[in-house]
Length: 186
Image (tube, rainbow, N blue to C red; front, side, top):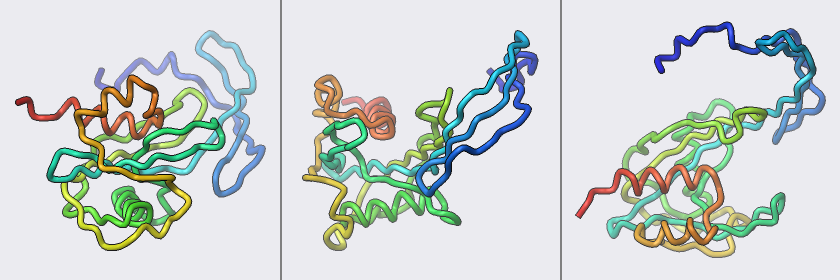
């Protein structure tokens, strides 16, 4: 588990060719060979890195946004977050997205929880997850298309929302499950 695995099981990439690219997505095909010697073209998808922040208030509630995702036609509760712009640090992106989408500015430094890949077998899309305790409301959200409604959701209600399928976003799940797992026990 130290990362020094035997490289004989690594897939070999001989060539990669872009098929389509824009700001949101790059699709490529790669000429690869698996460890058993089989060679074929495999598709790869690249998405820009994203940053997500769980903002927790003094009453152990997390700020969430009820929103529609048109691609999967899904309604669910999500945390603020978005694309990390070129030259921007992920923590800066998470703080910027919080202000734009919620009108709240994180108080203090954001704590990095994890960077994960939500679909590691085909898609490269690093997601940087942060937590911050304490925020200051500095205005109204400037991003009006992000949420139908928002709420400060008590942490005690999060497991029921997950069980009911009302939290489906991978970054949100990672963040709130981390909060639940690291929560001080009474």
